[in-house]
Length: 165
Length: 165
Image (cartoon, rainbow over all chains, first blue to last red; front, top):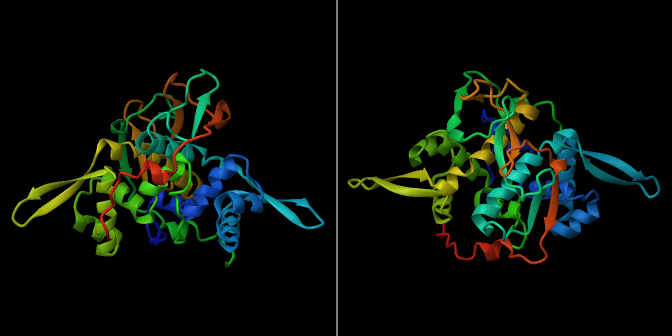
């Protein structure tokens, strides 16, 4: 881990996602948010991340509209961070990541967490389905269409102002 | 981008995936591999990444069994890199990443690439389905089960020897 990559000149939706949430700490912050973490001190304790780094990652997530800061105490002033609908839409990404780690790093059944699909009662393993027809797809069922003109990631994110660290 | 996070002490399948493929360049290398790139010079040209960084990322992907090096010329000795089944299993992750970038950074229809589901003919937007029952799920349909004991990411990956850069 650790080398930097600049995604802003890429014309790519994957790079766009990475530019917003691809920072190594950010994905762990989001993972914990889905597990119910809302407060600075909780993240700090769970991740052991430097306070200035955590503060800057949360600020960036708020600036990008992935999380929202909500004041829960006036005196002393305290806020907590909750996932917005845009942030909640990252749930498939995190579940897909967890599945690959289970399958290929831990081995199925040996991972630290698993999910149960309440509707059918089975252990949940995600497959991708087509939103239009509902069918589970294989990547070979997809045809890739490249658009000749499109913005760079930097252009697409131009309006987002990230506070300085 | 750019701060480092150490995933090896985490007990988490998401962190496990990030430890293997979460490096910023690595995900772009894999993206290009799915688009058909197999040779060092092609990646180097497309990504503008330093040669030593690219070489180390490819070595790491081979060491983790995500890609395989195949000799295609003996004189001069040349090899190309192809995705293994383990690597091909990253396709849902990249498609899910692309979808979020399309939805929330570019805006649907404005992204640089889209996919068509050949079977039904519609533009492809992924949803997660349950492998067992085939039903498209919502994250609220899932119950999270935490296992008390499990390996750290570092322990799970102990056998993998990554060549020095």
